[in-house]
Length: 207
Image (cartoon, rainbow, N blue to C red; front, side, top):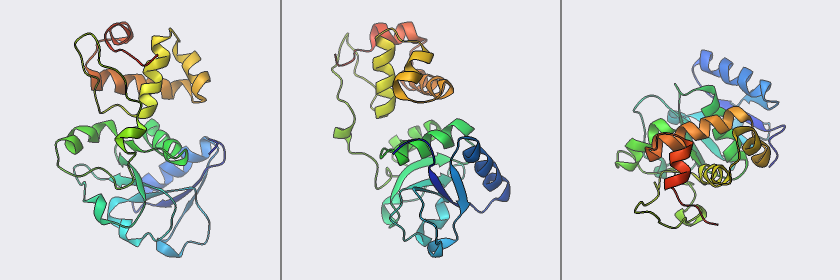
């Protein structure tokens, strides 16, 4: 799905957050509107819903679930098609990235939630991509790649290894340069590398 004109349904109780997301999505050119439970009449491409309201959803639209701090419930037990999990206190780029990835048919998890999820504090979202959907990159130079990287982050690593700068990567992936910077920050945090040079030198990519 194209990034332009994504229809986003909001099931967010906190007024300040709802207003923030409405302005944020509108600035991106997306159509955001409130959706009241299962009775909303408008068709939405993506639903953004509080995690405690997932049981109200009966639509087939994919869902971005909003958590509140450490409140990560058993997402496998809900009927909603949860594809992404974002912490309410995340930066704007996290909300934009989550909606964009879900609209494109991918999954997304806030970097702040990766560690607790991997530690088994909660299962992965029911509709998260299967491991096979993520490019399998070869091991090399004595290091196994971090499994927490998303498919999009692997794409960014591959383009970085080709010598592309942030602007060139943004053009190749049809995303904003700020989103590329967001990805790079996540990649370095997850892999433990110091900078791009170390990333390229020590992380092999399929070629």
